[in-house]
Length: 119
Length: 114
Length: 328
Image (cartoon, rainbow over the protein chains, first blue to last red):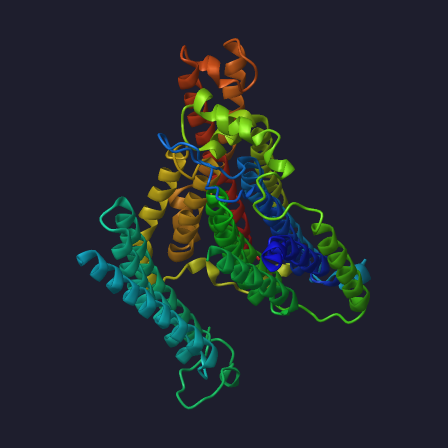
């Protein structure tokens, strides 16, 4: 039972590890596209944390079925936040990629240190 | 009686499907070169998909869910082999020759044909 | 049983993310990101978030991958190795990770019904959805009515990002770079008959499914964001199979831009109409004599606006990147 209780935190551990893997890619990689990939991993980890919070034991997806009494629903609010955040995330990612493409065209490279050297 | 028979049959199908997926996975890891690997991996989205979906359809009985499962199976049966074909074709076009004797892929990495 | 499966998927998630960071081939990294998104979608589904899983599968695994690949075709797919500064980053990240794992023990465990999140406003939303809107999907109700301001803001962020991409990539590239390479992506898969035929079979159904999620969003998982992403995926698939120009013939740039602007405007103008009819901004109840019907009408219209804006924005972004390939 103790083990099961600990496993209740497993989602949060995965969140912490994936978040830090994303952060590592952002701070240690020089390639700008790799940085953006790291950023999107970071973002996905945050999504995972929010969705983890919405789960209620024995609950179902928050779609109310008529005529069924005493249903338990998972919390719909984090789902709404993340639903919109995913779409906004891809749009902003595209914006970042567009800038990377322009940087490549002007500097001929997307490695951060080479860009700094060129300046 | 007939219910139990259907249940047993569907579980047999589900397990067989699982075995197919497992074989596909092992093959994808263990086989020597690219073409043999996708040959193994394609097992998962044809035989594995058919067996698992038929098993699940038998489990759900005659409901709307059965129809949905059938539609998904049809979709997977159309797209899975196509994806495998596209993968193999792309590999061939980029210069990876299907050579039965070779044990690894990197040897024939030439310039892609223009 | 599902618990074991969830742990399996989450472990795969960690492994995939580490693999993404370790590989030096960016093409491989992008493909792994696609797998990462699918795993994430499966996890969301296990955690009862059907709407989010649908969005993540369509956007994360479909559209993001294609946009990344378009960018890679322009920037090159090899990452140069870098030696210095790694150790410090690793140590810092490891310390932060262990601190965060330590901090998680103060959180309520997974699925705890007494957690603070579930106490405040969520029960109110679930209770009032039937009363105010009389349709089953609480997520859609919150998204488009209870928290309509949020969604309006998000739609305008998508709109602004799309305009930003068009501005940044609309400038012709520097002239001396033009000789660099001839990219052949434009042709589509003209010599690949089988994918084309299967694509022609499948694409109508993808678009149909997108429309279904759009208009069935009040009753099942779905809504404007998912539908826009799914339809965009279908049309991007068409562009990949038949070539850029054919897709632009089918849905020209001006139509896409019109969809982005029209969608955002539609959302905003519904709010303004609500004000003219004597309610607050985005208070749909005043749209009709029957407040429930008014809510349903308002939600239907703004979901259509969201769908148009998202679909148009994603497709415009894709075309902006793809057109860049042909010029350079």
